[in-house]
Image (tube, rainbow, N blue to C red; front, side, top):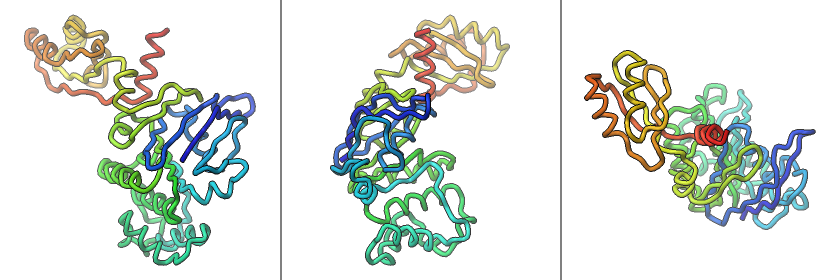
Length: 304
């Protein structure tokens, strides 16, 4: 359904994409992962026909993004990171506007259906200027779906919304995978694990890895990461933590410490025992979800 071969994009002397190759099968939810500035948005803009590649090819639903740009656009629904809105439009008027631009037949019925799907029916007459960020994200999803595209491309759809709305958006994405091919951009590996069938990771415009999320986490995560808060003098607490078997690195993190363990080593019981033996009160201990930025920075640091 999506096939990219050796995609390259230059902005002047800056190389934003450097020979990226990947594909997405019909009905697959493919995560496009990487830290900010990795080239994710550039990739999606090429696939939606928004901009041409400098070299390489890309096809969507069998149509080339350069030679058959209009056919590609008919088959793609795109939700950018910042949803463009007209503040004085109503919710229904905005989605109807997109339906007419897309040439949707029986537009009124289709708009009603999409608003119901993203749970905006009760806000259909609300002005867009009065919507929260989370509701604007739902609106962006509605405009991306109104023409029933084969492929849905979502650029960081969970950025800037509250935890409950993040859960809702993730559930919408899972549901989309039943009827559409979905390209889902994020920089949070744990999010991709919950939503995506497979992921492609890029960094500095280059393909770093691809595969199933759980396999990539095992491959890329440099080790267990735990947040520990202990009441006591900072230097003494740090010394206790650094002496625990299996601990590779201890760093101050706000009122507590970030503890990195050797890969595949569970040091939580040892931390609890070591802190207790030192007569220090353990206030909090929890695993830290790794972002791709954390993983890449750690890998670069170890290589240096």
